[in-house]
Image (cartoon, rainbow, N blue to C red; front, side):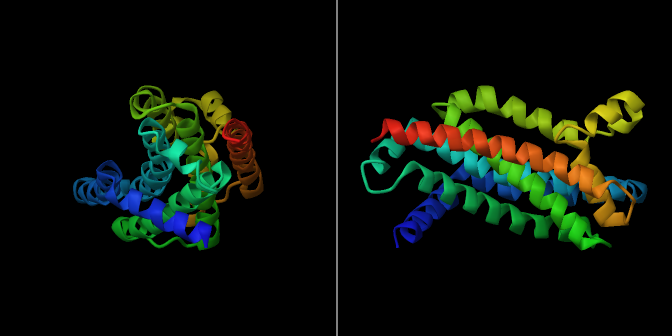
Length: 233
């Protein structure tokens, strides 16, 4: 019951946060505008881009912004005076961010007007990127003490990852493109292209690369949550 009550309270905080509502409304609007102005030949790029943007717009921000905001307003300290533990707060925020991103993924598929020909591979790519984005947003939310520092330090990282994933780096040369295969950028794009259009890519290798980054950010989160749990005892 404690977790249910916590989830309900956290969901209300997300719904009432104007910045998160803005991000959630802005992404479909941007997708519709891009679909209207981009030529038909650019549709493959658009549908992949929309699926990449959703986890960074929704998952990253729901986890990171709510944590930073609660730390700034000292609501976390008050919450930790109750039987609620830090790991429960982080788990609930992560679950809400994951659920919201999955819903937005379905919306982006509708906006892009393209059904994946290999939906299992598309979903694998989307899920891995979502877990990474939520984990990275959570990590920054735990590290930064308020919204201002989150904006100054976290937003550039978010933008860097977003652009590093969506820009056509294959045109920059084979060396850079090969390096991208070992970063949390190209594997997602390749997997999504395989899901949408049936392209042949090294699915297992790309999935393992992303799993490594997912594990890294969540292990870092576990370490920070343990430290936080020790401090509030």
